[in-house]
Image (cartoon, rainbow, N blue to C red):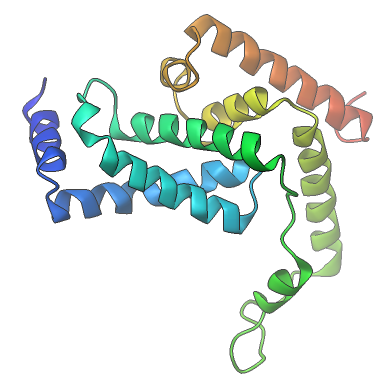
Length: 193
C-alpha cells in the first residue's frame, strides 16, 4: 500500500475532519450527479448523496483501502439506490414545475441566466427528452452501468466491483446498453436509420 493511501486510510479511520472534508469536497458532486443519472429527482439525489456519506462514515472501519474511495462511495450509492427503489418504487425524472420555475429567477425576480434562444433550446430539449426516454426503457442495472461507465468514467473493473459482477459482464452490459440507446434514438429520428 502506497504511503499516500496509508495516510488517507489512517486519516479516515481517525475521523480527521480535514481528511473527511477533502473526501466530501472531491466526491459529493460526482455522487449526486450519479444519483441523478440513475433516475432520481434532485431532492432524492441530494438525500441519497447524504445517505452515502453517512454510511461511508459508519463503515469506515471496514474500508481497507484496496479500492479507491470513489469506488467505495459509488458502491454505497448503488446499494442505497436499490434500497430506495425497493421501498418507494421508481420516481419521476422531472422536478415539480414550481421548483423548476423558481430556479430560473433570483430573489429580485430577474433571470439568473438569460434564456437560451428558442431554436437552440428546442433542439437541446428534444435531444435530452429523446435520450431521457430511451434511458427510462433500460433496466436499473443497465442504467447504472451506463451512468458509471459513460458519465462518471469509471473503469469496467470499478463498476464490476460496485455491482458485484464480473468485468466481462460489465463490458457486455455496457455494449448492450449502447446498442439499445442507439436503436432507441434512431427509432425516434435521431441519427442514421
